Image 1 (cartoon, protein in one colour):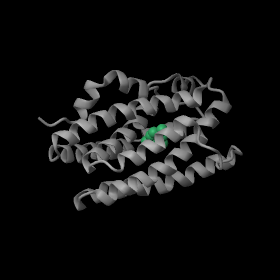
Image 2 (cartoon, protein in one colour):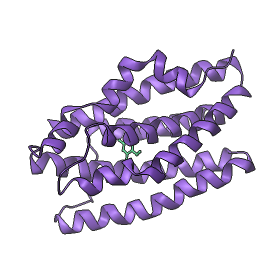
Image 3 (cartoon, helix red, strand yellow):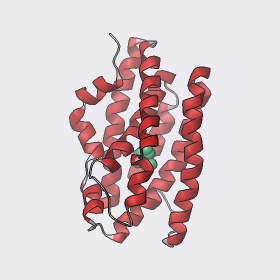
Image 4 (cartoon, protein in one colour):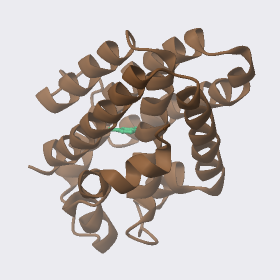
Length: 205
Ligand code: HMH
């Protein structure tokens, strides 16, 4: 029996809720988030995305050729995203040369660990990480200014489509992988859910 992405979401629905629903997002939605809290998230997420980009590059290096198109599309979006983060930081006068906080650092270190795991586990992790933001930024509903563009970045229909393609790659890779790799993918999914929640918490307090 092969585990699929949709089964992971069902089996660990409680943990997934923690990753995708948080007061940080609700307070962006209601416009009551403190600027300093939002800026903390912004800077730390930039630091995360830098390391996440390296992770995606390693996933690409391990991918079968017929998975290149989707993953290269993701990397190309990340090129744009990194520049966008820099623009946001400049207009908000934020310093991106900041030390990562523990939750950010631990998540980035974890990405390095996942890089040593089988490709099926890596591509499942990639899907989970992208889906987390895709859902988290969509679930509260239309975000008011100045948060609209943040919600759009990860909630837009093209990004949703990209995440669906990643799900197909992950399901396909898992169907060809060992039982061990599938167990590993389950534990990675759960760990990512927890680390996503910790990331929101970091910015919130
Ligand atoms: C913490 N998770 C975190 N940051 C992001 N930018 C993404 C996921 C992207 O999907």
